[in-house]
Image (cartoon, rainbow, N blue to C red; front, side, top):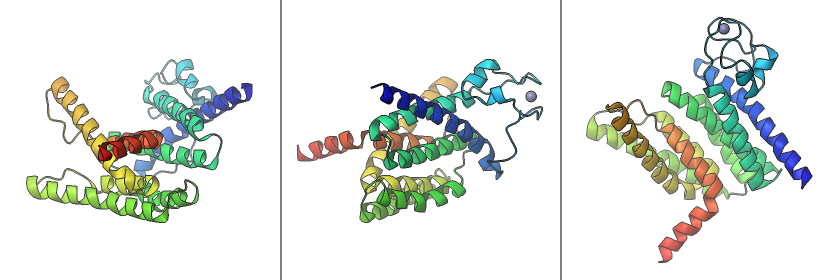
Length: 259
Ligand SMILES: [Zn+2]
C-alpha cells in the first residue's frame, strides 16, 4: 500500500519534470531550435533561470510569476503544462501499472501535449513531430501495446485519408482552406497508435468539442474565430479520451449496434 503511494508520488513528480521539458519543446520546436541547449532563460532580459526557478510548478510560485531580474510576467501556462503532464502520468500509471505500455502511452501523451500547445500558439503542427511520430507510434503500437499490424496500418491510412478528403471538399465547396496538412498527419499518427477503431470516435468527439468551444468564443467575443481556433488540440483531447476509455467506448458502440 505504502509502496504504491510512493510510486504514484514519484511518477507524478517525474511527470512534472517531464512537463518542464515539454515547455521547452513547445517554445523552441516551432522555431527549429535545439531543445537541449542553451539552458532556460528569461525571454525578455535573457538572464538564465536560477535553479529554484526551474523546479516544476513550485518555481513559478517561488518567483511569484515574475522574472527575478527584470520583473517580466511569466506565463501561468508553464506551471499548467507541468501540472497537466504530472496528472496524466499519474492516471496512466493507475491504468497500466509500471510497465512498458505505461512508458509508451506516456510518450504518446507527452507528444499530444506538445502538439496541442504549439498548435494553439502558432496554428501549426510541425511535420517534424508527426512524420517522426507516425512510424514510431505505429511500431510501438504493434510491439508494445499489442495491436495487430492490420489495425495499425488501417488506422494510419483511414486517419490520413478521412481528413484529407474533408480538407479537399471543404476547400472545393467554400474556396477557403479550413484544415491544414498538419491535421491530416496528426490524425494519421493517432490512428497509427490507437488503431482504426478509434478514428470514428476521435472525429465525432473532436468535432463536437470544437463546435462547442467555437460557439462559446463567438458568443463571448462576438466574432467568428473559425481561423483562430485550431483543430489539433481537439483531435489530441479526443485521442486521450479514447486512450483512457477505449473499453467503455467500444462496449457502448457495440451495444448500440446490437440494439
Ligand atoms: Zn527577465
